[in-house]
Length: 196
Image (cartoon, rainbow, N blue to C red; front, side, top):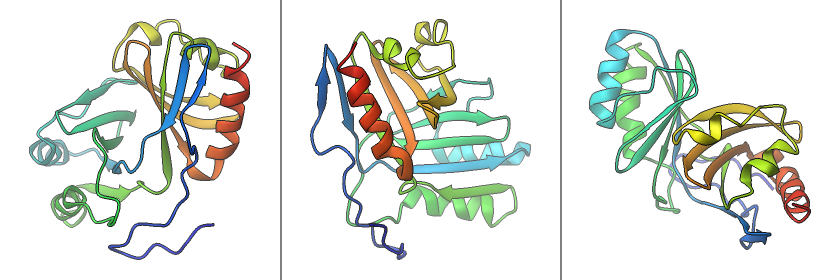
């Protein structure tokens, strides 16, 4: 069901979740479309340029995030971050002004790399008191400290699927998963949440 990506035209993807899933006080819904960019770089000039363009300092401590009014940045490794929009973006185009600006100031000047991963990753929003009980049933990661820190992030496995987890707020988590694994993960979440 994938279509070739044409610059300036959004891919015609079906939503993974047609409706919000609700089980035992836990709700799961897909948030789409959300712009997602992957940034890589190490040089001091890279951090300066990104900071000016995002009006936000990239997090440099492992498994943390930083936010502004419009964007959130997740630490992925010492030289890699994912930036995503806090609000939905226009669905009729996959050209983002921020991507163009960062590409011109970072990629073109050899300070680092900017990659659009909007269509590659699905964002699921989970709300409820049982989120971490659900995660514990399918992940090797220990969420005890994680769940106490707003803004904490991790890359882990959930039902043997690579995911990025962002603790957005109390009882509110962003879960990023590759589109090719998203239906399988949603099926597992639906099944596991019904048994909490």
